[in-house]
Length: 433
Image (tube, rainbow, N blue to C red):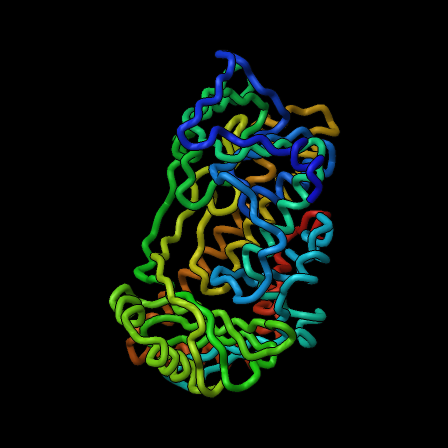
C-alpha cells in the first residue's frame, strides 16, 4: 500500500477530542455513496471504482487493517466458507492472489450427518465438477485484500471515522449528513452497514425478524487426525456443529468451530475449561478426528435471521447483511452478500452506460428482482433445516435419516445440493462467471 495511494484515497475524521472546522453548507458530491466498508461494501466499491465510477465509501472505523498482520500466526475466529463463485469475483477484483499467498484453506469434501441416527450425505469436488468445493478464509484476510485494492483506485474516496446521522432525499438525489457536519450528495446511497443497519432504519425500511433461538459458539481447535480438507457438520439434538478445515503453515490439523446451540447450552459450553470443551467437541463429531484441543478463547453470539421488506427505494439500495442476515448453517452469508454486490454493480454499470440515473428506482428494481428471490429461498431453506433437525419427535428423526439417505443415493437431489454448496444458483453476474 503506497503512501501516495493512501493520501489520495483516505480521509479520516477528527481524533477524539479534536474538532475539524468545515464550512457550513458545503456539499461533497459523488456518483455513489456506500455506507459500510466491510467485505460486501468494499467489494461493491471496488467493482464500481474499477469501472471509473466516483464512489465515496463511508465507515465508522478509525483505520484500515494492517495487511502485514493478517493471515499470520493464530487464525482469526471469524471465518467464511467462500464458494468457487465468490472466488471468481475476488479473482476478477485482483485480490485473490494476495489472499492465497496469505492464508486460504481449501476443502474438497463435505460430510453432513444426523448424530441421532444413521443418515449421512457426503460429496466431493470431483463429483461437483470443480477443483475445490470452496475455501475457509479468515474474514480479516478477505477484508485486508479488498482494502488494499480500494486505496489503489483513484475514483474511490474512503472516509474513515465517519458516522451517518441523517438521510434525506430531494431533487432526485440522496443527502447524507455526517456527525462531523459534512454533507454527502449522490444519486444513489447504498447501505452495506450490517445486520443492524442504521441507514436502513433512517430510510424507514422494516425487516421480518426471527430469533432462531440459537447462539453460535465459535473457537479454533487443533485435531489429532488430519482433517483431510473435509468440511464436517453434525446435527446434534442441541443444534448443528461444524468443523471447518484450516491449513496453517501447510499442516492440516486445525479447524474453525461453529456450534449453533440453545442459549442455555451455549452458556454451559462457554463455562467449560478448554480441555473439557475439547472433549465435548470431539464427542460431538463422533471422535472422527480423534482428540480435539481448544487453542483459542471461545465466544458466543445470538443468531437472528432478518430480511428487509424492501431492497430498494428511490436513490437507495441495501446489500449484504443490511438486506438479509442468515443462520450460519450452510456458511452462505458472505457469499450471498458478495453476490448482491456483484449484481448491483452490474445493473448500475448498465444504467450508467445508458445514461440512466443511478438512483432510478425502476432500474434499481432490476437488482432487487435478481437478488431477493435467491436470498429469500436460502433463508427459507436454512429455517427449514433448523426446524427439522432441531425437532426431537421420533417420526421427524426417522424422516431426517431417511431424507439424508435418499439425498445421498439420488443423483439429481445430490447434484442440486452440490450446486447450492458451490454457489451456482440462478443467473450469475458476468464478474462471477
